[in-house]
Length: 153
Image 1 (cartoon, rainbow, N blue to C red):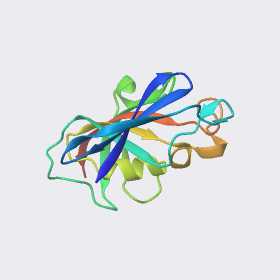
Image 2 (image 1 turned 90 degrees about the horizontal axis):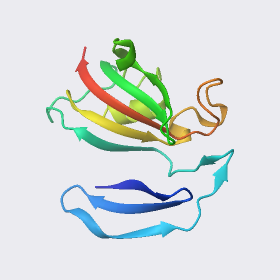
Image 3 (image 1 turned 135 degrees about the vertical axis):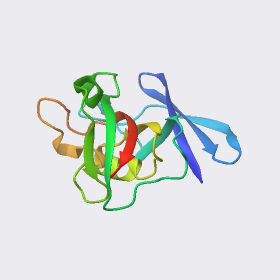
Image 4 (image 1 turned 120 degrees about the vertical axis):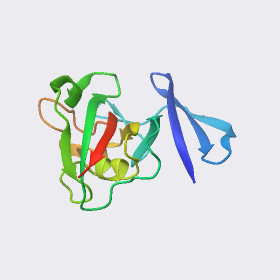
């Protein structure tokens, strides 16, 4: 299984590097000359990209229907912080796979093990989409979450 790591090179250029979980870097990269724009937002590949910041126990993963307890910080791709449970000092709980949260969280957190801290990059279709969240999240925004899976209940 391969994941796709994204890194900014310049404001309208992006470099893609392919990594293999077993073999590391696959030895190539390519650049997209200019990314399409939509309402001043970069269009990222669809879905959720997960980057492990700190590994968890590697054995205990949440199951569909199970309540998870997380800490998170949400930001836009420009680094602007939107929200943080850490700042409030109050973890957030939700039930995996029940649609209580954005699709990116259901997908991404379900692939985290207890104690893991990861960065999730959620494309608009896995976040708030074309509607955004008035006053906080622009339409068609790609969101970045720093999430720590504290426990499952």
